[in-house]
Length: 488
Ligand code: GDP
Image (cartoon, rainbow, N blue to C red; front, side, top):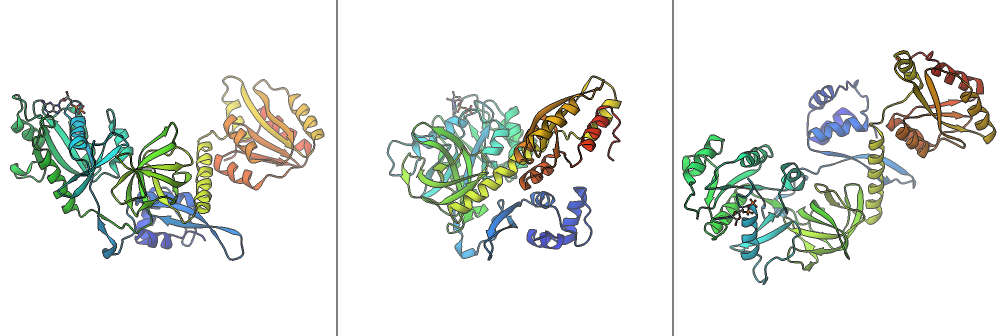
């Protein structure tokens, strides 16, 4: 169905004039009742944190009809209150290098893993859970030196709370500031861990003053930034930090519906020898189960096994839980979302549709080479220009004749090159070639396949069709001599 402004506005929970304002910002001025292009609708959706998707649905008569459906990833539809259950907070530790991020993560990993599990966590899946006073906390455990740009992809959206570590002997350093800015921009709740308080050179008061200077006033200074003085080395204050995290989590009322459609964010993805493609996800809503068919970015999949942070096989993963998923068709991207689908068939269909869209998008930025552009190129001078042609004709005989006639045209300014010259209709792969080699497509007495029309439009590839040989040759000659009028 056509996408109209009032309908789109209603689905986004906005007034039509809000959508009009967005459209004008995007440089689109639709007349009343004029349907929007799907790409434009998608951009409007994006502004408001929605994702715009097309979904194929079987219609009564057995043919496929493309429908426009809006799915909402950032804020799942309001769940009925009674279905919402508390979920563990998801925490990221950030801070300047050597201030103790790894030490904090190691300390909790070794001492506070879910009770009853001996030996601690030996397997790194990118996140792990600890239990404190019977409450769970999920820590993102980004290996190595997390770059902030990477962090953004990895977990910023999933993260609820950012713990900013500052070494008490060192004070605020450049990366501390970066971390603070980053967390503030992403609107994460910040808790400050003043680390290395065991050192004689520790100066907690100085750290607090520096924090205040940078907009984080600690609670004891009358502000609202919670902080803990800790020693990741000795373990001092480590429980206090967990309690602060749980307290904040309570204030934030972190809840999710375990019965909703499963949705999870990918925080790591890798190929493990013997296991194949795996990814660690953190479940955001619903419950991930073995056998769940899903879509993740452009790839379909089905949960074959789930491995928790202790390396154990589990059957289900609830909201807030990190789990390694086996069953991806291809390596997903960190930051992508895994969404449960009704069945494998639908997952596969949506997967191929998204892959197709990606493919077309990759073709898009290619320079549009039109014959008319040669006019400008030729008349602007410079070196010799290239006219690249993909020629498709009804029969081999015309291929030879036309090719010969075109190669016979002499031009000082333009060289002509045939990328392809063959009999047959204009296909999608001709378009792909044209886009990648910056060629134009010329067809003589041939049809253009429906898929090729679509991708040519998307990629900005010109297809010229002729049924009279001399017209075709004349047009090439004019172009090569720089005589063709530019299109305006
Ligand atoms: P990261 O770069 O932020 O991950 O920092 P690390 O956790 O690797 O810690 C850097 C150095 O500081 C290591 O040598 C740690 O042993 C040391 N360190 C971490 N926490 C403490 C602490 O609470 N007290 C002391 N004295 N040293 C610490």
